Length: 187
Image 1 (cartoon, rainbow, N blue to C red):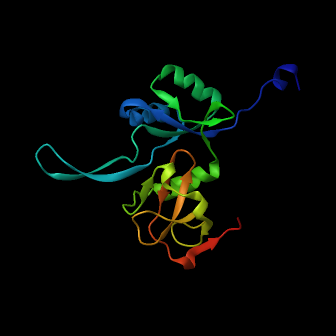
Image 2 (image 1 turned 90 degrees about the vertical axis):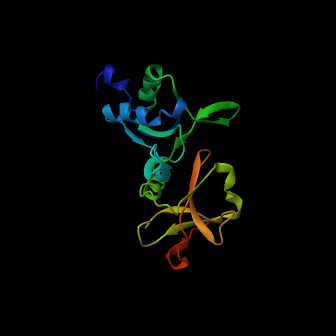
Image 3 (image 1 turned 30 degrees about the horizontal axis):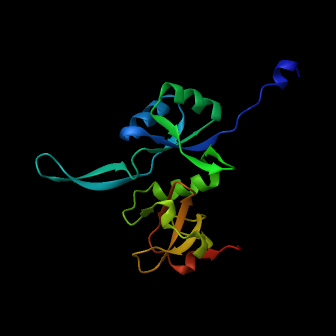
């Protein structure tokens, strides 16, 4: 091994939670897709009224200005210099603003739940989920087999739901799932 190759480190791919100003998340996604960078924007169908008064169903982002980017820290830093309206979502740690990096397993579960545009999904802000009152669970069987989340009561809903959460960013509550399919995980 030469001295040059010892200094080269391979950066790991990570999921970065990013903000894009002025509802430009789809154009930023297109730019990153053209560079073969994996991205994810949670989408849903919404009824809109067209200019001629007809009701149409449109696929649009659940939360405007939110995009998840799966890449290396150095790439996203370089890309941000070319696209100034793309910024990290951050959280406070030890008095500093630190970019939010979503663990691969958590992102996989979130994509699996939100990728089917199910109209019974309920999207929640992080502060709307009381994590302390929920039990960690895993779903067995069905379309969500293997998904892990919190089993909590959602305000305004009759029964408890499984919530998949990306901490400090967004949460999604699934439709009611039979308790036969839910395994409570050890705390």
